[in-house]
Length: 244
Image (cartoon, rainbow, N blue to C red; front, side, top):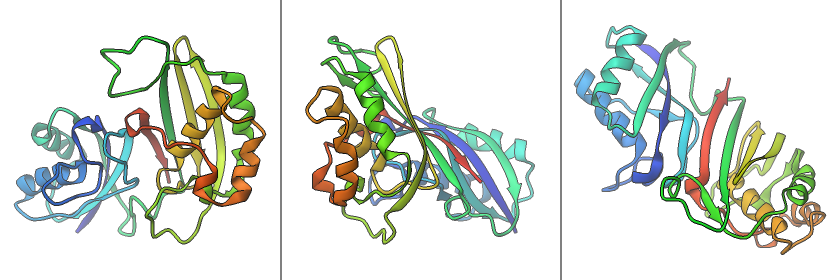
């Protein structure tokens, strides 16, 4: 039985997140349904990241095992022929038997997008967080520097969660502005539940001077979710890449 790795992208607008749920559309359920039609057997799949309802992916990784003798190209064509148009398989690779999309990962890159202008967008309404008030990007970059490194990120962890280890190493946290669009790039060895969204929400509060840049260090030290800012909406979040 072969172990397969899929790299997929999806628009999460129509889905209740990655993880399978009773009576609700999810990305995992859509992929498993397509695999069942191809193989005539039930095949569970594992995703590298459990993206929230409305969040998107450019490089989500999925692993599964199958006895069906198909080439990588045929898996891609077969799956894309059955999946809905907002989910696409970019590549398929055969892997070592012990490969696991989630547990074999060594790092991830997320991007969060904000549309920072007074007027709302008709086209980007499900793909960016619209923040009308002008953000101080310099202040946000100053604050973000306190989060780079190995820290206890309990203050940025959503609840409920069964995660027992709150330590993450943020390798890079960059903020770039391209006209009205502000992009946050967060790269780490691992992320806690809603961690990127909580970080972005807190940095936006810095950007509107609701809290000073130096407060991020104090928030980390508090190890308490109540010390940080709001959780940014899921629809501005993208899982860009998973590293192995």
